[in-house]
Length: 583
Image (cartoon, rainbow, N blue to C red; front, top):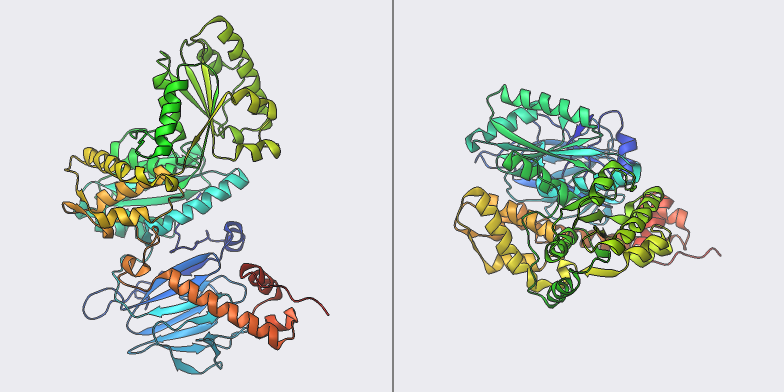
């Protein structure tokens, strides 16, 4: 088992499998070498963080590297560079930045060349690099930002960026049937947090993925962990930290048992660390807020249909609260039995002959919730059909026979059309289909949800709830919330942990994640979206110009651009440029 430390927006592959793992996650790997007195870590004479920041942007990734006031920063594809960028159109030793009163750049004889402000530079020539001027290395762009930022231990990364790494791992695990775990470490004494960070850094590279959640709380990603491996690793980790006088609590969550999305896994791990007991990765502690017309209509439908015994299918995006809807149906039905949840992606059997299902069928007034029914294997879907047949016969004999509910995040018609969901199973479940709207389409629910989540977080901390400013609500309202209500709850809880006064401020929010100016997140560095847009506009113009110079010959145009023909074709598709026809 390997623990992986992800750089900002990138991926640090375990040693010995860099090429394979970088290709698996689908974007380039950016690695910053850990050197105690590296120029990427030096502090200036005022004792502040590095005066400059190097932004690295490429197809599908972005990262930032704090720069010192003097020294050399080598950049290239080889592992002995201070900044390693694993992209095929970058040379092993591509260029070097010379840091001083001003930054100068020197191309080291790269194969595909370097462009500064759109102009190719001669190898071996040092030239000034003003702040904000884009440097192009094939499909990757570098920008030096002349700003002061706060810098911590170089190998502990902001949680907002680390979350993207978890999302990549979720997708990889779903494709490959793999598993992984997240650990949440909570330092009991805030004054001991620096010691904990130093110890975590000392455990590198063995612990080579750690992120700072909030001050005093840390997340660790464990890739490829089986249950026994995880238990052994936890014991080893706790022993190593406690031996150095650090008192902490630890919670963990495992994919897919505790969830299949970053938000549910992070919530499970952090709650376990906070409470010292096992919590399910559902939507515990939340309620169905219905300030919007869409949710008001959904609640009214639940009220009318809950007393019936027919199966129901609950459809909605990840994190919308489908399990909450199932709980509300069960509660309003006045059924006396338990709500039993079976995970569609789990290993348990749904066969009516299996012992847990027989016990469930013996409970009067029970409700069976099959989570993510479209992720059931064909064999388990067949089992569910047999189970529903059994339940239907029981309903003919008793009104309090068990009821079956199912949830899915997929487009149900598309799932049936593609064969992902058996059509006979769909017809048995489709007595009623309830659609839970995404948070972005019910903005009226946002403010009451924030109030609720702030109150919940403060109750656990025995604190008075802070005042929520209009600027905070405006920032939250501008975000699309792909993770929906669950994502909002996690963001609000983390903001409450970061708040150190009576008012919740925008600075307590993950501004990078919410699409705000990147400058606010790293002390007024220019917005990444603006920089990326500038880069894409410049690259598009260069492609059009190169094709014109090459008379439409893609191979020749690729040579002029310093990229491969395959990369050029991808860029043509990306920028919706027509492919030149062969004459």
